[in-house]
Image (cartoon, helix red, strand yellow):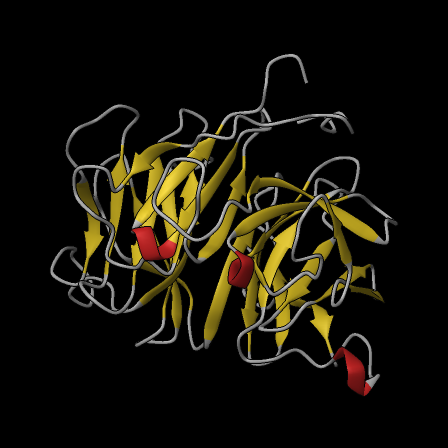
Length: 296
């Protein structure tokens, strides 16, 4: 995806792509395929991964604790992604401390691909390398590697301020730069061993009565280095250009609620190749798609 135009705008009324018929039961994460199929992982309720096809009226469970040929399924999945090369989904099995693969084509799984790892989040780059947040660091596993390379955390930069919390989550850009954040409002950018703190705390947000950024729930980065952030405590999506001292509210900010132009505790976020934004609207138990305006 090329960089989104600096003056781009999004439709303010979202469209529910998951949860409209069968309500979501607080998933831990989700991802979106190129055809806009939505996959959502559930840790606390059913230990499952559910699939919503575009415009489908019924949800389909594609992986769960009572499915599969190995280890009796998955348990407490944390994070979910699609590996296009094998047409498989991947997730962290928190109970068994492993990263597993589950075939979407024939349903075979789960197959352990990284054992003995206390995984918190997982991402994949365009070359098929897997990035796993675990034990206060992020490790990259290229295809075929059994021993990965630590790319973020104190083992890369010994400065105490670069310590990663147990709740660390990760995002990637097209240059394989790693961005980490946790429960606060600080992003750390990791580039080939260099670490740069990008403070968001206290940043002014234009056009919003509240003015102060609250907390980071989800993060995506476009080709221009612009951040797209879920400001969870303030029920809005903020766009933060590279090097800027303040951001702009682009979605939400209309008070807490369940209308199509409102959010209620948004957490995870997904930016697709067209610039459309998908948001896990946690307390409304739905995933909303906000389409980019075609003139943008």
